[in-house]
Length: 60
Image (tube, rainbow, N blue to C red; front, side, top):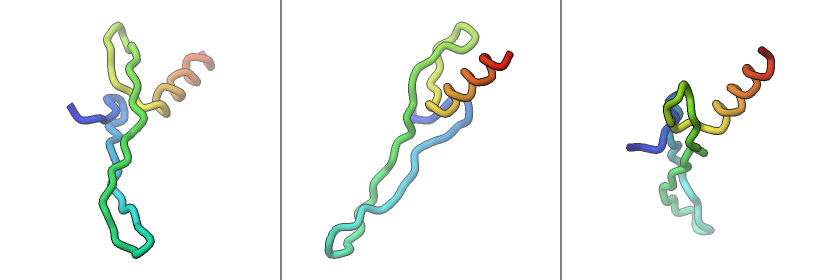
């Protein structure tokens, strides 16, 4: 299973690392995915989704 958020479907990003001689090597930045319980099930969620869910619960 890929490292992606099951709530917002955010996935990894691809970019270049540049050396001193400007040679590009491809790097992949992973999303900060944590496990959390939603409706009694364990899901993978990114930290921004976890924070937004905590904000909506606090307002209610």
